[in-house]
Image (cartoon, rainbow over all chains, first blue to last red; front, side, top):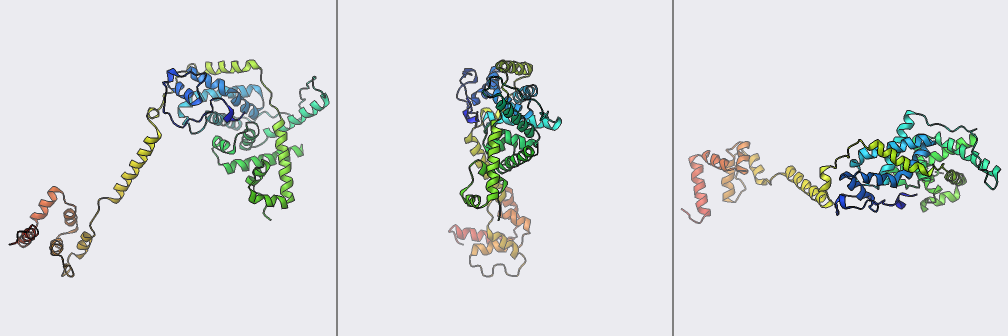
Length: 204
Length: 187
């Protein structure tokens, strides 16, 4: 799901409050109002932020680490960091972009500390017996495992760029904001990521 | 032949290559093959699905986050956030620019003062000057050092009195005559 498609993805460019934080209906409030309500003392506003963005944050973490346990730990860590750092959110970008940035930084830090668990190429894919053609399903699963394993071996910034572009469908500009980079560098990283991926898949 | 750059390849893979580079892509088989190959790979990567966690996981995740933050205080809102707005930003920027301009340029300084300061000690500082008032000021200024001259040019209440006290009898009499002439009460 694109950031722009998310509910409450409105960009917060200031803090001219038109309604007291206590009066805001949190279930229908946009992200800006939620942040204001939270900073104004309404702890439950953060629950709505988590509810609204948890799937996207989890997905990017899962794509990065490739296993559910680490991804769920990272997702929790991202939201704890967000809780503590939300006062630093300036509203120059969408809250979703800011959360992606926190998430990608957490993933990059983790990658620097611990080499990501690489899915072995010979790992047996799960076979869906209900598939119309089980053999085809097996082959597709094997190929998907090989692609995932190759993505895991990409340099962290190339991996982040590829994942954000292909799976999260973020624009080059949004990725540049998240990675603290330029649009030109993002495009170059995207190209190099695909080139490296192609070489790895050919050699496997 | 110059091939596409990495950025241009990225644009070409996504079908966003600028028209100025499309001609190269038509003529260069190597670049065309590379673009087609990477575009196909992108499609394949996109098709790799991520495992979807159990539906129960999401609520569990929210509870974990709530538990992990329950002991944390809500961060205080910065004091400026409540009063900050675009108009204030623009106003502050204009005020800053005006302050910088004033500090850097200072009050206007008459060019004649510099000329007088340079002429100090010359035999005839009034040569070529027709205006009687200017000639008088030039004659007086020629007896002052630079610091006194600056004080006279940018007078303060005390500075004017001090400057008058420094005049000799002849200069003081000339000043009186000049003032009377200018005020229409000749001798």
